[in-house]
Image 1 (cartoon, rainbow, N blue to C red):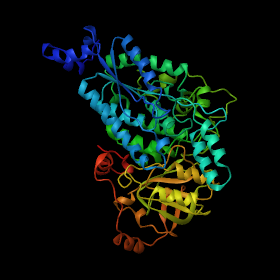
Image 2: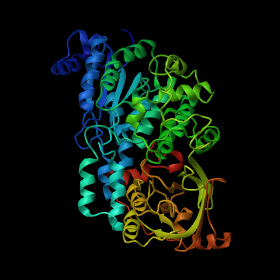
Image 3: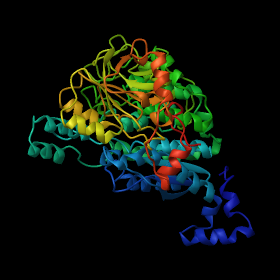
Image 4: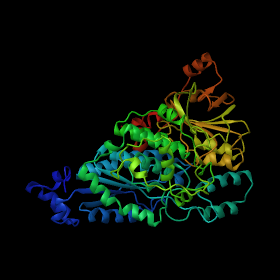
Amino acid sequence: MKNRKFSKVIVDGAEQAPSRSMLRGVGFTDEDFKKPHVGIASLGASVTPCNMHLDDLASIVEKSVNSYGCKGITFNTITVSDGISMGTEGMKYSLVSREVIADSIETVVGCLGYDGVIGIGGCDKNMPGVVMAMARLNRPSIFVYGGSIRPSIENTDYVTVCEKTGEFAKGSISEDDLIAIEKISVVGPGSCGGMYTANTMASAIEAMGMSLPGSSSQDAISKAKIKDCEATGSAIKYLLEKDIKPSDIMTKKAFENAITIVIALGGSTNAVLHLLAMAHTIGVPLTLDDFTRIGKRVPVIADIKPFGEHYMSSLNAIGGIQPMMKILLDKGLLHPECLTVSGKTLAQNLENIAAYPNDQTIIRSLDSPIKDTSHLRVLYGNLAPEGAVAKITGKEGITFTGPAKVFDSEEEGMEAIQGRKIQKGDVIVIRFEGPKGGPGMREMLKPTSAIMGQGLGDEVAFITDGRFSGGTHGFVVGHITPEAYVGGPLAILENGDEITIDAQSNTLSVALSEKEITHRMNNLKITKKIPTKGVLSKYSKSVQSASLGAITD
């Protein structure tokens, strides 16, 4: 087979005998040196349900690769768990892990001369991290999603537990009730089951063409997921033979397809951050304004949690996202000509996809959407000169005005929420949680879930220079830029300042005169301390604005 442009440097010729001797030590044969080498990056780890089964999938992938005349070599990289670290200092490492994953895969593949790459990920940052590595390396690549967890028999999940903590704080349930929910809600392998960040990114990557058709909606433990892994060998062989690389697939139109699917599914705000980062890595000019432009013509049609009623497993049972993609394609909302890792175009992949059953209630028709335009709103104004990202479905309302309750960390905000110090009409402000100032741009699922649990979801708003989990719902605005730590306007807010969030005019503003804003800016002193050593220090020094995807390149 052709396309050994990288492995031949490592193993061909008498001068590379030492290299071959090392590889013989791990089982290589004479024939293996003549084959394209495919690095299989597994993010398997027992630290989280999202990833606990991925090494098993990697074994299936390696066998498949070997059966199609290539040589698969499996290696591992790190993963962390947002769900476990949420609300703690540990969460500062979550977004950082995206860069570590990308760096580590690039390091292994670049060092060892693999001709192709297959990445197998589960939890939130795995997916963009893997795809960013593939983009940097730009050699034939396929992403394999580990699949979604099934909800409990009682129809609960991780986010349910988070919201129950708010009910406990309110006094609506006992600690025994809380622990009972805790014990039943996360069962078995797979990523969180709603349209949270993991399933959002898996869907976006499939729509972009970097995973095989149908990959994104499959249950983690299923025959379909096994078949998905078994199909990688044939697919990577074809990509290698034709020299089809990520740069051939991850085009501007492919990113527009991904954004369209994220909107239609009501996906996570984190998709904005990750798609911007992935586009930067591959060299595609993508901005916040592209999300606004596409959002004006694409409706939300999926009734999936967190603001809907269903889980991804239910959508998978009726056909997954492909029938929905066919609906959007037929209406001219997707670019049909985009190439995918199947070797076919998007249109060709969808050509024979059957429609959803007539009696299904998960995916609405385009004539009767949940929301006519995007739920992802990019806001500008005197609080967000470089932009902010809101997740507003319309169920919460379209505008919100209220007095600021200002906190300089997630912990301070959480203490106030749990202490019942937040009142109807308040705008909670949590600042100094941006990429540089956190550092790490923590997700605010615990405070937003506590608000929901207290029954205040429709009564208060929440703004931050941090991020929100895909499981967050309510009137929330994140990714505010410039962040407070670098002197953004968020840093000058005081308790009682009147803040307005307007999803019609796409603005985020505070009712202060320019004179007062200038006065406060001139007298601003940033006292927040950040680590001076270690990974958080390095990240803070290199990371760029959330409006650019919090990239470190």
